Length: 282
Image (tube, rainbow, N blue to C red; front, side, top):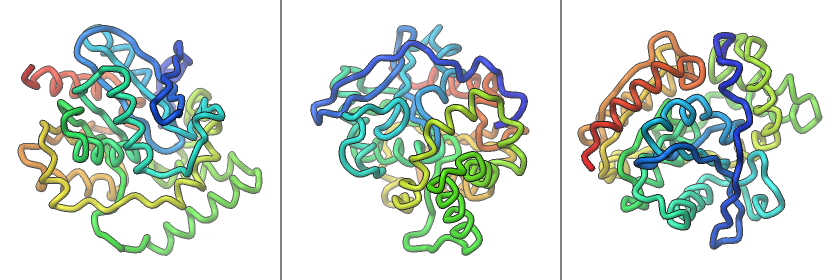
């Protein structure tokens, strides 16, 4: 995020709740008509993260963004069970099926990119195309986090759990984007991150699975990989490696953008996404 962010991009739209067969109530917003675009948020975010896409692209598509369980505005029925990535994959599959949306054009960012990747692999009948923006997760199984990264995450979690939420969020957000980004971020983004701060320590206890060649080669749908030009190297490395493993994957870069590319550079991100989805055969 940075100071260029449209102040309206993270405003609160009209929200609905879908009660899934598992009993979880999933918050979502839906705009427009046409082929369904389903957006999956990452760390510290929720359905509001995609307002810059659902507003602009709803002129052509049915745009749906969700809040995964435990994320704002979770109620008691959205807090059932442990916080983990595979539960989020299963919830999304339930949601698509219960809402009669599939197959969808699936778009995931950061941690949500990893969730979207596994949804496309495990439930191919529900996904028509896959777009991963700075997908999170490691490239090598059992590879430990660099000591500096592990220490930073532990400190951020400790600050949040001790009630110094702003300091913890600043530490983490700057580490996955650019130094100073938290202080430059607009109030709506800081509000959203603060609303979801309690999920960060849980997320650190739920490491994402490593991407593998076999899993990537199992992705059957057309795929677009988007990197922020100034994003941390781990995300750009993920895009480069997945581009080699996923057959026919397209790769695009958002010039001048860091990790929050779809908010800070919404017009360019939307242009790239619309151009890709518009070429997927009916």
